[in-house]
Amino acid sequence: MVATVVAPIVVASPVVDAIPLIDAAPLFEDADAARARSDAAIASAAKQSGFLVLQGLPPDVPLGAEARDDLLRLFSLPQASRRRLWRQKWAPGNPNVYRGWFPLEGGFIKEGFDLGPEHAHADPRGDALLEATPMPSERELPGWATSARACFLALERVGRVLMQSLARGLGLESGYFDEPFEGGNSTFRLIAYPPWPEVARQHDLTLRPVASPDGVRRYDIGGEHVDSGFVTLLQQDTVGGLQARLGDGFVDVPPIEGSLVVNFGKLLERWTGGRIRATEHRVLGNDRARHSIPFFYEPRVDATIAPPPLADPPRFEPFTYGDHVWEAMSRFVEFEGMQRWPG
Image (tube, rainbow, N blue to C red; front, top):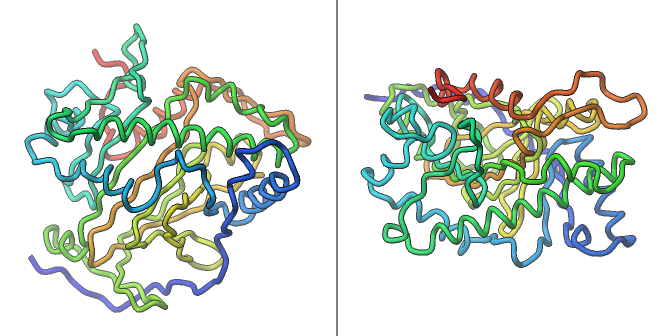
């Protein structure tokens, strides 16, 4: 098959400093003026751009090329090993519905793996949201499970500290958001994007080049979206391609080694009455393979989401987080037709 190529139709905006870089170090220390400055910067970014980049994270947060390469060993697994991790959507004989591998099948432009909390939740009802993650064996990937779980726990701590900063920025008690996230059900995802021209040829798709100020060849792959949950912590590789919609166009979110990109989800926007912004974003295809490692900081499945005690509080009836997340995710193609309560 030969991909169709059209003229560039989207121009990457050259807005400078649109995505603020914020020092996270004071957030992990005792209250002082530096923490107040970081809080103010985070509150401003949450309200204005809905995107920010955290730098100065503690050394126990495994970031950078070496840690990333260690985690990305997952994609060296042979196809037979990957298939054992496939979700039930693609492998009906597998028990896992919510966690595990989503393959590059059926026109997907990416593949990846979803890892849940470092321990399996016990739930007598068999809620698919609480299932254990199918893991590659130690023989297949020595030390990989240990690395992945260590990263999960470190990012969970970053999520907690960030939510405490957001609470202070909203004028709430620092620990206001802590309780719903105790025993949370966060998701740690590893994603591989193959070179976009290769995908376009395989599926007879149109290549839509994006004019880019840096001269790098990129392609619009039509994936604009807003995250549905609370907070996303993202480690990018150096290939780049992530863009956020600000103003009349999209701006690049810089891939900076040793940092985490932060953006906020639609549910947090709703929970705070629009005081925190969920911003539309997209990934541009590239001539090179690209990897990203997002962490979706999520509360307990049975946590109640209710209007916070803010001036002019948002108006909505309290609801259970698990019900919300299943309704939202069941609209995605990788979960379409799946059941939350197997059997």
